[in-house]
Image 1 (cartoon, rainbow, N blue to C red):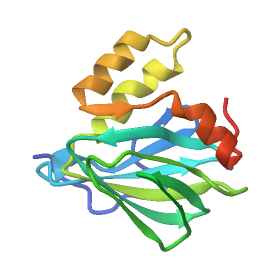
Image 2: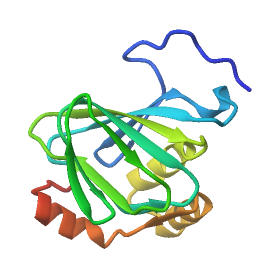
Image 3: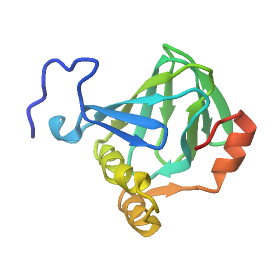
Length: 164
């Protein structure tokens, strides 16, 4: 197990981007004996964070720090504001987006840890042109994640999201 730092400043921690979604590593699962990880997500106004997807191995808990986050959790549509905590249990399809006109920030607790590695692995592949869809598919499969990329246009239209 790695030793955790006792203080992480607001501009510290590894940062990767998956299109508009920023992922700043705050606590890696290697420092918690795989119990959990903590990632801060930043998302510009009206941007999609993730299309409809389902985790098979981990639960996620999103604590909203700034802005408004729209979520589809199963068939339910929610809007979370600063101070709200959203529970996204494994096995339940969900998507999220910035539902407002300012940058949104949220803390994402992932339990058990491990899924945080997905962001590190897939970010450079999503930034490459052309994207290597086969390599992305291998990573998605390794993390036992189901992603419905076909949900993107409907989410964008339904919630007034800006893509690209």
